[in-house]
Image: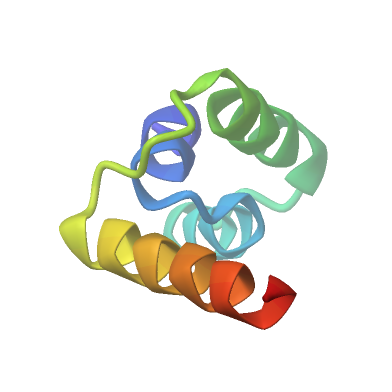
Length: 67
């Protein structure tokens, strides 16, 4: 569950904190490990369209700043 959420939202730390609170599971290490594995193994293209738009805007700003 942690890996899928972290891969989809691209937020491994907040996924860890959220799932540990929702499930009352106190050891954070397994959740954190699964979150980072999902984050790093997921495709680099965001699955959420708002993140994709933000990424495109940042790329455009960097290109303009280099000129």
